[in-house]
Image (cartoon, rainbow over all chains, first blue to last red):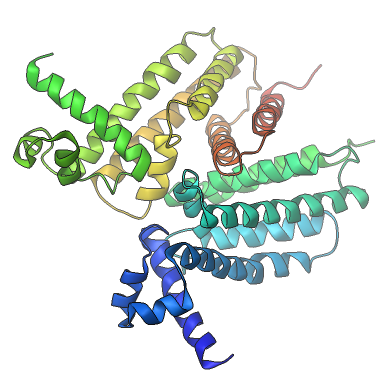
Length: 199
Length: 199
């Protein structure tokens, strides 16, 4: 990485932390300049607009998600084990204590759903990409005979997403002591429905 | 209602609309004073602090939820029909076009989960009350023989909550054209699991 790129990454690291705490909308170039004691014009050289900054923050969070969840999950054997590995890694991501603002995508989804523009478009693309990965893994599990041949991969991925949002809500807002066991029971039920009927 | 109460309700009506669009944190007494051309001191007479204003906005949204969802749902016959009626009314609430910011509780949950204080405490109480209503209805369905006697009402309510958050996400962020049919399939699967095994 050149020096410009190193600086950009350092600014982005701080920007991701700020966005986690106060949301993407609070993340302005003026605020970053103040926090990092940099000139606004210098920041504009890296991020041409507030929207571009928000898009890059989402991309930075997505890179971490790929490293922490997608890559380790996809290393598991094809079929149900891979579905399980992805979901376990996703649960760990949702619970991570190093992330004081909770899952950045869950927060951004609520913040951006009513705000048309490039950050919303990027978030939607990232979330659809992730749903596609999940659905693809379910499709493979059907091909391996672990799941029924008529399982609906998109429905499965959609239900997983709701399950994870419910877990996030139970852990972070309600501080439900049973949140972990509840999400595991919900996941096992989803797997059971997907498996072929016993002969 | 006396004149003071009428004024308070009118202010609160505007405050709920503002909170829907920009979130509870953006809802300050200064902003309301400006919007409504009232004095800040007059507003302080109604809402002693920003926190108290946020609490009253949550209570106002909860009153609407009770009128639109809880009361009509509880009029259905005991057992599974009542569970269905509550969920159908809840789905209508989540989809309502008259609510441009989406479900105020889903948005507030993301906003307040990291912010200790009286608004967060009130939100948690309101959500636990609703989960209790749902779990109680499931318990009645078991007593009526519509659901298995060993159904876990709290688990059922927890899964319903996740299902609804997933629906909200699919409708509002992803604009998934299949969101309604997906949530219905997920709900039917949840009901199937809860019913006694066929003899």
